[in-house]
Image (cartoon, rainbow, N blue to C red; front, side, top):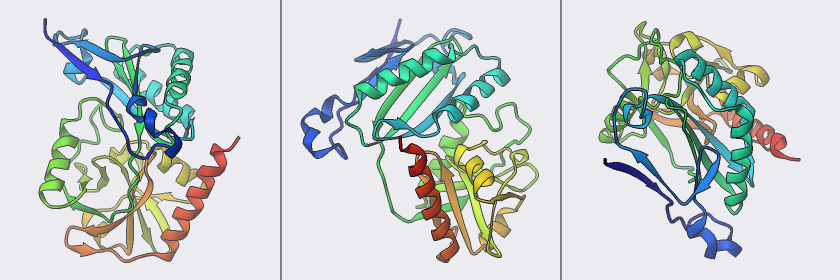
Length: 288
């Protein structure tokens, strides 16, 4: 029977200078709570036996800073809620927490990292931790012509069934952009292919409601709870007219959209202030 193999990658960028000799060994794979040097997965597509090939499972992408995982409990809360919605049997939560500490210890030389935890429908789970590529490049988006179904069972879930998002990103890249703006069946903005959406209007900040079909993002939730961001429906046409708009994710925080289709966005002092205050707040929560 054929096998799909995930092997440790060699990475040598953004590691601590004094540890550059160890960089090629940093990426590790955690499989069902145990560290492995590589991972062999069955290539059978039998329903219920290989969620990997069928796209039957969920995942979480998290950020690490100096060996600490940002908003870890919030991400696990979302994962276990999503698993319950889809009828997946996830591992005991404490086993995941212990396993992730093993992974962090094995990759302790990573200063800024991206963690991915994948839960498969057959009960297996996989986690990796690699260097997070930080970028300050300008961000551009275009509209995506195919609507997202806000009534789907998969709406608001980080599912392995990623074909729609992958195609959207190919559309964006072919247009010279970084991401797309999804509209839903109601014609309102839902999210981007990889992030939540935020915009500024009359000095206030807004984000689409969960009823739009967007992911219940962790950064989105914190901005609503602690920074006065409000939920509001908006059409893509009206979003393009806004003074400033942004993409939100746990890994990269709040990133300004510099160009939407052919419209150049303005810089915003309010937006810069929000980004600075949010970054300071995140950093304060990562301290002992």
